[in-house]
Image 1 (tube, helix red, strand yellow):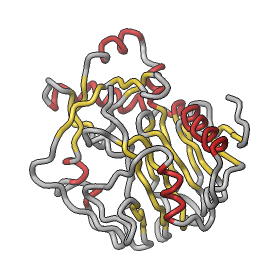
Image 2 (tube, helix red, strand yellow):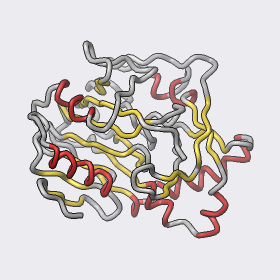
Image 3 (cartoon, one colour):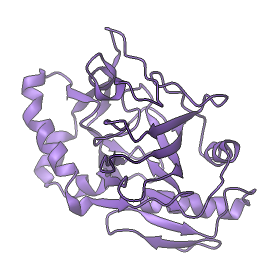
Length: 282
């Protein structure tokens, strides 16, 4: 893992690294961008510290190196920037956005490649983000469990989160979400996904959007999914990001779960997210 133009410091054993030596507020040369891309593949979650004052245009310019932009179907975007979500929790809000383990946009036919999150305003304490490597979770399974899971597909849907009773659809002072229609599309994705760039296998189910195993009822699916959900968030597969204002995190939704902790009552947290389109899982 030799990098020519950046310094990389691991955050934890399973995944995560801090990146130093790259300024997203200015043009980035090809060598530095290649190093950032490699660090992203090596560590699954990268954090670029000290990007205070990063403009929406520069955030998008960085994300554009990795693909086209995803437009969220249910959440109103930032004014003048349809590619950016303003993820805001005001002091009086009880619920936060992303407050449960999930993989962004897995309910789409072609789920997201990754998400670029910029910390504009962070609470004095709390508001950390947890990440869990689904590659590490897969590799820790027994050979028998891997063989059983190999042919299975999970059914992914936005209905549970963005339906009438879904947490993600609930009103917040500074975020506007639309409720999903009664008929929400469902898409089957492999329970074990092969990463298109690294070739590594990982689990690809998550508690927010995987509703059952294809070909099974919800009741039949529940014991297996519950096992996978509990296994996939074990502490040994995780890292924890303590935010500073200005930080930028970029994580790989193809092999990573994340969870925004809601442990800062009475404080404000303001983040800006750009999500990058991916491909159909295989």
